Length: 262
Image (cartoon, rainbow, N blue to C red):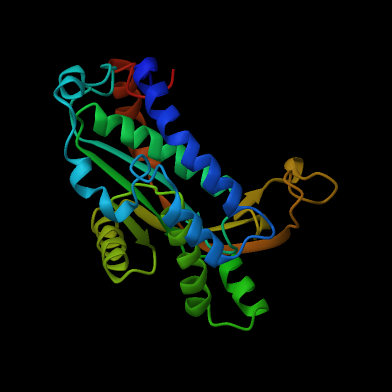
């Protein structure tokens, strides 16, 4: 995506001082939670990096100049329609690290740029609380999986608050409304005969949550260095993508800008 470089740099420069200071504090090995909160509450440029709970009115307003300029039009974005952006939905097998801060800040800068450009923005973040890694880590800590994810998910919320990330909503995959939405989506796929039950086998890495072929293994491990185990004929549901192949290829041919970047 191309952004107006001058305006983008102005936005990033205004946000950088407080974000850099808080990042430095957040990942210092000697800092305490109380210290972090003191840094957050006493910073002199608080008006630049508003806490997430205080930006709702600001999100809906922008200068007349910004609103008039909009954002550059592309083959898949008219520069005026509502804009949605999400951080990764973070995995909760451990506490957040600087990589999570990086992706959160990057998303936040784009969301703020779009708001200043007069766009209606919906900015999402959250935590993915499903998988064998979560179950395994919770067992190692002597906790029930739900108790474990409650604790770790909170640490991600606190990171976003510390960095003044302006997300509109924080989703958890254990939320009741999320589970209902997933069940509805699954039932719709079943009703449309879009999925089928089959079986899968291969070398599986719990850490990577990925299957690997024999030729992809390196010294008996995944390319990432993760341990693998052979899974034989595990029942799995598959999406009937082949039924949509011709329609998709025709659409891509007729709309060359649909998939980006080129």
